Length: 228
Image 1 (cartoon, helix red, strand yellow):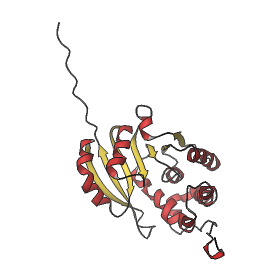
Image 2: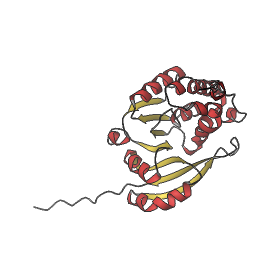
Image 3: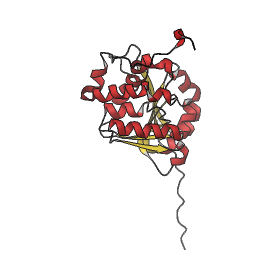
Image 4: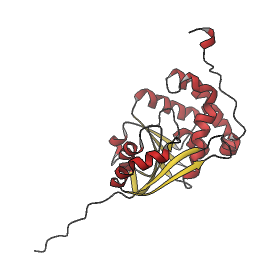
């Protein structure tokens, strides 16, 4: 690698809108960005090219979806990776009960260390694939970022939802097209409502988009007891 190809690892300064999202939790948010720029890169969780845009494209981009969840909500972050969106949400909303699900040991070790370093007592780290936690871990809310197409993601996430629950899936500009293409498969999983939502328009140049999918899993009818 030539000198001109070296990557910047100095964490970027926080944008002006970050304080509006994190409030008095800004020191923790800043520390999280510093960790991502350091061990997040050396552990392969964040690409070095992403360091200059850690705030806008990653941490703040994830934190703004906090308005999707009610006070005190329990939620599961599937495929948490570098703690996005889970740890960003945990910092912005200490009232949330957040459970990170990540299959890779290297990543869960990093997540556990980061949770401890940030002093986040509202986060639990779980190692394994989403399907391994069916019947073990559940919540009214599940979220995920850039994990898979919406139909495949829903197959992993819907079994983790409690009753009539909501999957808040972070998606790009093709979100509506993806929803339209996969709606038949989503209906089979019990989809009852779908909304495309924008978050953070006041603090981001490009708002974050989520597909908010409400599911009511279909239950098999119970058979009546035979009279003797």
